[in-house]
Every structure is written in structure tokens, then in C-alpha cells.
Length: 260
Image 1: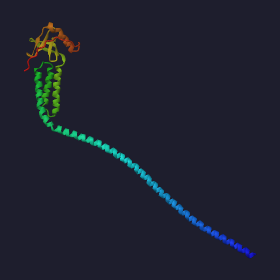
Image 2: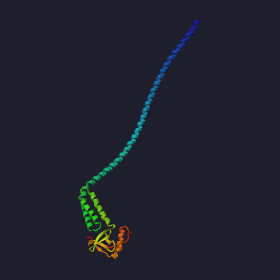
Image 3: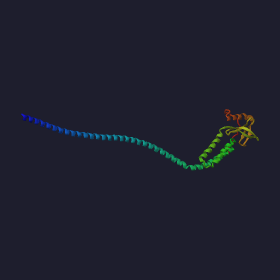
């Protein structure tokens, strides 16, 4: 009986030992498998992180690339506009260079013309009615002296002589009045002179007792019929001084002569 009990106990112990051994072996293998799996998972995670980083970098570079393409297109348009402007400026430069080449020729032609214009205006003032004599004579003298100056370029000289001609032209379209002492029949009189353009130049004493007209042919003042012209000249002087409205005047006007 005791022997049978021992045999049973031995069998139980042996079975338990076999189970423990098998269990120990299975846990060890399972742990190795788990560790191997975890390592592969970590490796896969790292690989995925690298892939994500590469993808993100590629996306960023793609965005940058597209942005650069837009900038390049904009620069191409800008460069085309600049090239158009440069071409236009080059054409202007060519025109300016061609014009500059003609400056010396123009100056050689302009100087004799200006000298003739000065001589012409000087003769005109001398032969014209005697009004604003000092002012007009000084203007002509200034031009005659200025033509010799080297510090004044030809264009300025031409502008000045044109200005003199314009002033003389305006005299022919204006009505004017001023005081002066004139000689009529050998006697001097203080008068108010009325000039109507270059059509007529008449005078009247302050007391309106004497009226006279300037005769261009004789270059003298000639007495007028005061009964005919007294009121007309008086009113004309008022008009010139803006003391009366413009109205019709009766004035002695010489008939035009034959041009020579």
C-alpha cells in the first residue's frame, strides 16, 4: 500500500515537473517573439517617420517650386516691359543724336538771321511814329550789344529778338495815351497824346484849345481843325485812360501810300 502511494506521488511530481519545464520553455520563446515584434514595430515606426519627413519636405519643396515659377513668370513680364522701354529710349537717343549733329549747322544759319532781324527792327523803330522812343531805342540797343556776347547761347538770342518783335506787334493793336511836350508850328505845347495802334497819333492840349496830328511823311506835328476833332480826341484820350467806354472816334487818318 505504501509502495503504491509512492508510485502515484512520483508520477504526479514527474508530470508537474514536465508541465513546469514546458511552460518555462514557452514563456521564453514567447518573450523572444514579443521582443522581436516590438523591434520590428519600432523599426517600422522609424521608417514611417522618415517617410513622413521626406513627404513633408517634398511638399514644402513643391510649394516653393511653384512659388518660384510664379516669380519667374512675373520677372519675364517685367523684363519684357523694361526691354520695350529701353528700345523706345534707344530710338529717342538716336533722334537726339541726329538733332545734335545739326546744331552747329543751325547755329551758323541762325546768327545771320538774328542780325538781320535786329537791323530790321532798328530801322522800323526809326521810321515808325515817335512813341515810347526811349524804351524802344533801349530795347534795340540791348539786342545789338547782346548779339556779341559769348555767354548767351544762340537760342536765347533768338528768343529775345522774337520777344522784341512781339512787343512791336502789340503796339499796333493797342490804344494808348500819355503826356508829352511837342512842337506845333514852331511853338512847344504840353499835350496829351492819343495813339490808336499805328493808324493815327493825335495830340491835344490840356485846355483842349489845340489839337494836332503827327504826319509821318514830314515827321512833324500839324495843327487840326479843333472844331472837327476836339471832342473826338478828348473822348479818345478818356477811352485810352479807361475813363470812358470804347466808342467810335473821328480821327484824321492818312491814306495808305504805295509800297516801295
